[in-house]
Image (cartoon, rainbow, N blue to C red; front, top):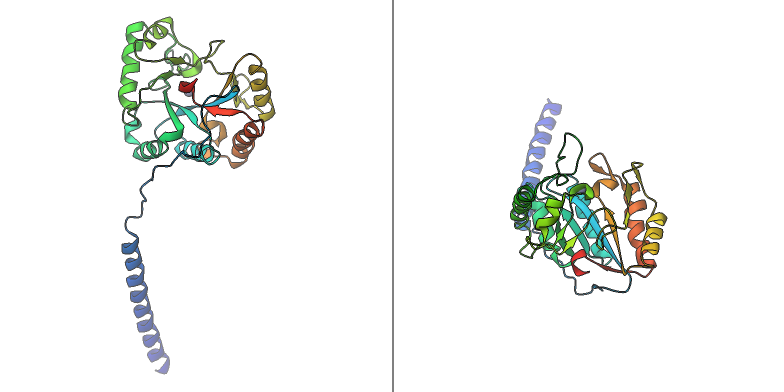
Length: 271
Ligand SMILES: [Zn+2]
């Protein structure tokens, strides 16, 4: 009997405790307001930007809605903390659906150039061929314009850098770029804005050592005042998730070594 009374008392005490904690918990939630914080714009007032005699451009391709978004955001954050601007090669299709990415890119606008990287990055011939590799002038124009329309949800700035998927494009594509306002075309080859180094080799399917990337830039600087490095968020992923080891070794280490080398940093549209 005594035990039964004890259990009832303990049970009642427990209910009271739960009620007290519930009130405290919901009060705190209420005080804190919405759980999702608004992203505040960052300032680039302390950045040392602009062209120098040896400027590095970090061209991050395949920035897109949803896929590897958290890695993209982390790459931009870590570049920002080091005072480094980035050129983002954005795949336009469906961009407007990823409001978190859009808000983030807008908040970081002061150190980002939004470049156009195709429309949907699809293969043009079965499972091969760059999206713009075989397009006629008219087809390329239509597709690029669709992309520009989608990118307009992120920025009001004119988009002046064009990066064709797989770095290849048809002569028809090349013919319409000036008319569409592009001044900086970055592809595969020996053109003035073509990429000079990369963090990943698509020939061997392997990440490229930071020392090799630095060597490629050092050689480039012998004849040029800029070195364009191509990167992709998925270079630092294991499937869809961040691979912390790769990220540290091939991205953060690269940023820090470029700083140690004394290079300036800029975006493609500033060259
Ligand atoms: Zn790409």
